[in-house]
Length: 69
Image (cartoon, rainbow, N blue to C red; front, side, top):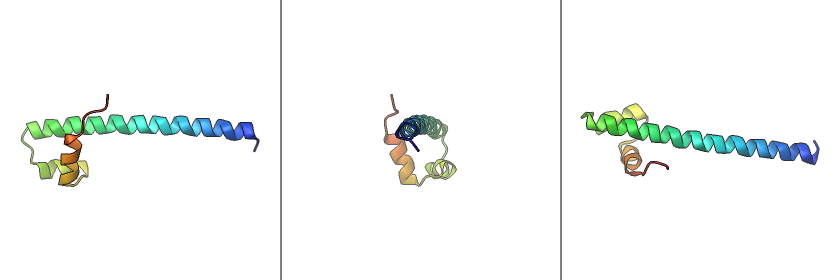
């Protein structure tokens, strides 16, 4: 593999990584939004955490975070 080809691979992998970071941030914001909505609708925190695949503490931590800008 040439140095140029390797560097193109590095650039592509870096772009993919950045896209994954942005996708995760968006998915986390969406999850937080729906968890807050479920909470407003009176769904117990234990149920919300279970449905989200989180511990109750993980849910509380998620809800305490500020949405990404």
